[in-house]
Image (cartoon, rainbow, N blue to C red):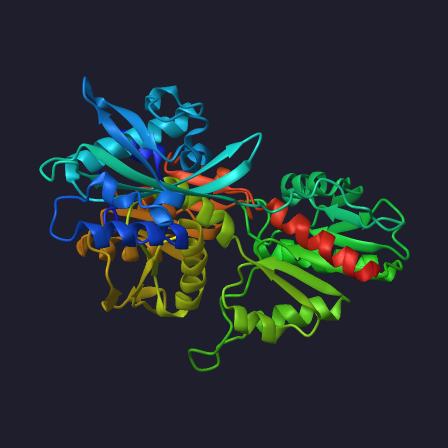
Length: 495
């Protein structure tokens, strides 16, 4: 295996990936490695003198350390101080590695020297870092053994590629047109909406929610809306107090109220959009609730709808005639798992064939973040009258960390089946990942399997009150994604 998934903890803390069959993505490192391979031939390792010919890739882009005669774990710089500087800072020829200006870079280099000295083979390490001077960077570090006497490793060839990475700019303030857009949110989604508003530099406009004795409800804006561009934020998950139907009906009535009172444009922002699972007729006389919900939004005058990770993207896009924006949390999930899994071999698993495209889209994003290939696998699932079946499994998970990716977790039955299938086929780590953590009452029992290592969801619904007691649960914020989408819509409309 190329990825050294199981190695010393001291190394795994310093590197995101260690590759014992190096394949650098940087062309300069690849040229250095090729020259080392050409010089090695049948020897244990090439001699230092053979690689320092003037004008070669090694002489220009690499540096050499040799073991100190009096202390085998001390390393002295022989040549290439300029090439070493981006990784370990200022150092002069003949100085010990300990004298390097960048102490953390020196520690990384020492640990790789130790490992290469033990294995006798070249190793490629990758890591990300951040400094006040350079900002966020991604580094590839190649270390290969050298031998002066042809019998033992007594020196090391190293070369580093340090590339600055530009993070997505944080949106702290927007030059809003006047009058600025208005944000409304019901009490059930107020916490999420307040985080979105804070990101946009706006505040939520006041709203009245009044319940009558017979169960009816009245909602109205407490600010003038005529001629305004309005976004209404409401997730459509059900709770013990409000059902899915209650929340959907309230949102529809409120949008109609805004249009009745002269709002120029109303956008429904539904982090979780209910009733999207039934998008086609799988049985005779089945409903098409996804299409019906779309018609309801259009009937009350909705101008645009923004949501995240609908059950079936194609069906969602075909159901609505008004403009829609479909968001995903793949980048947030990929960043989380990159830090969690580091150098492990990874497979992204779809728990059913219908979710294969979703899992593959996430896999592509994860590959870019990890900078290495990520495998894929599929589990067969058939559901009829609430009974789930299917035994087919395609893909390689043996000895690998798996991420089971779906749009939502409700009862947990689908995820539990997929987790068991992966465990039976030799997966070494099992992580569940879904955008919407609905977590019905049955989820606690279904997801109690001891080999499930973590459960990761976005904060599109208030997950804490449903499943907050599980220490394996991680809830990732996605409010910035919604805020940026709202800002882009407003800026486009203002042009």
